[in-house]
Length: 133
Image (cartoon, helix red, strand yellow):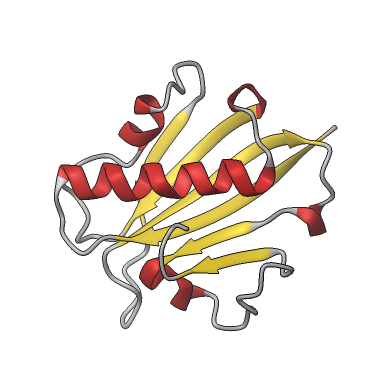
């Protein structure tokens, strides 16, 4: 079994505790589901936010989902001019038997703009959606 990185990103329309936790929780759930990840296989997680997302730590969503023993870290994204605002990014370090090319990276809502080079089809290794469905 190898340790793999699983990427995901979402966006918020409001800088509120509820919106940050809700959108992050939704993103995490899709990341876990699409990659068949069990919480005990997550070595650690890094959450980053843009400067305009500061009403709550996105890691609160993981704790809400029961990630009690998983090391979590929140940080800020580099404020690149013209970059996507209202964005929450997640990097999971996961112990997995999946090959690197089998990992599905998840981009929801406005965050799908982060990877315009990707096909949005289900067969693609990236899952890009207007919503979390």
